Image 1: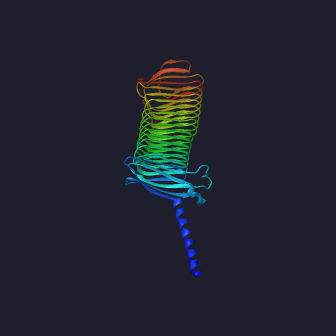
Image 2: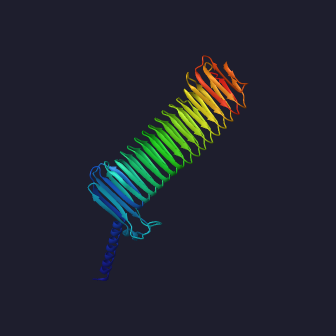
Image 3: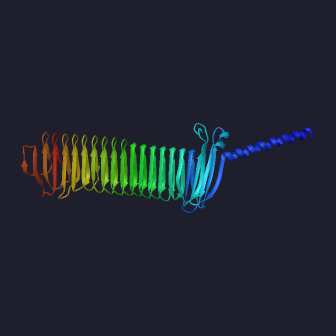
Length: 416
């Protein structure tokens, strides 16, 4: 063998070595496998660091494609992807060696998984990374410690939990349970009940056909177009609820509550904020400690009580109204019914009723340190020196009882 042939031989050997290294490195870096799965089977995936993307197809099998990423390719071989395949279940795990540091540039694994539409994801777990599920797919259970979760087009139930990240759910056919310790919940188009909880973040729910139960410790809540009942509570944040087919129970401990277009009854509490209610079909019970209450265009029994601000009732159509304020004014404008009972009271504020000129009612009015005034011709049955009076207007009918300790009482005619 001459020198030239020897050099060629050496170069060929080196090329084969490099090619073998590249093939080995590719095998260490990527994972591609396919597994058969029975109808209504389930897929589980447990990942420590990296994204999980799941989609569905019409095949009766699961296709798993994974890529390892990191700064040091030599570490790829240390991280194993283990799959256990059974007819009813495929389970995939990422296995790190003992003491291996996967944070700060260590090895992460990104998954792309295709699975049958009739199968379920139970669970998809990622310690550090996003989880995305795009159906149609039967059921989903997904958890992320530090990452966002998104689920779309789930035929039946979904259970989504993120410790530090946002949760997004769209077109969920069955019951939805969504939780975020530190993140926002965004929920759109659900066909059944929704349970949403966030410790530090907001909740947004739109187009929910069933009941919605939403709770936030520190954040805001907004519900729009709920077919069933709505039960919402924010310990530190405002609450907005609009267009609800059933009853509404809403509470805010430190901000405003606004509820509108409810076909059931509204029960509202604001500890340190205002209450604004509009177009409630079956009555209201509203309580505010340090804020005002405004109720408009509402039917059914109305109970409204504020400790430190005004109670303003506008355009009501109710047979029973009870409105009280300790340190604010109480105002009523609306229709009164024969046989109805209307009780309005303020300790330190003014009480004002504005009624149709053709109203008929019995009046009992009282004040200790204010004036009594009525624009209606009152047939007196009793009067005590301007501090209280009792009488009737027209043929009587509705029973009106008004009282203020330190403010005036006024009965006015509307200009209609």
